[in-house]
Image 1 (cartoon, helix red, strand yellow):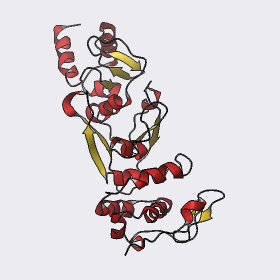
Image 2 (cartoon, rainbow, N blue to C red):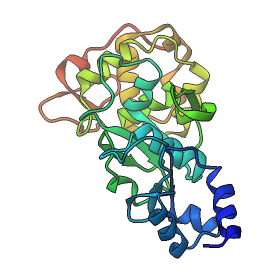
Image 3 (cartoon, helix red, strand yellow):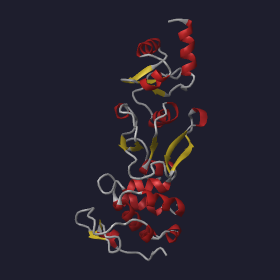
Length: 271
């Protein structure tokens, strides 16, 4: 390999901190062919994680059987430039809500985007992934934020994720098949400081009647101070009864089938 190509590789890899990842698309964008990528792997400059995905080894560390999911998502967002974000219950947990729900292990990480790379679910990550599109909202970029910098990682990179206001609506969309009313009820109890203006924008952008109705079922149930700033009549709640769970009851106000205990109306009327 020529000194010129070695120098090009060095300058290219400087954009990739040790321990972080790139894919074939990124290499091709930086004029590194598949043939050269194989040479880099042979020389130990890159480590193949799965087909078309490579890791820049960190000095003094051996190969690992698993890849940290946060490192993976930071690589996807900040190096490879895919428009994806962390959402749902994962975003709530990372921002200090649902602290009783552990991250890692068997708890899924919720990843949202319209261009999630197809190799993502093939990676040997230290947590399972659930992937979703962003079609819940007509404005797919609404309510996204940067979380706190991930500790012990370089360059103060932050994970792009849903704000608590967006994340709770993403979780609502998973009821009842992929999330439980009990878990969501406990999380909602801690959502005392949501921003009414952000909630209003997201509820107007929400494409699913089911999610909007469920949000107000929980909002009335917990009656946090911000609830008084939201009038359900300002949002599209649709018409007619909606079935959601078997063996439940139709909520008397929001006309959606929920477990019995959630069909009790509270005092909130959102003037």
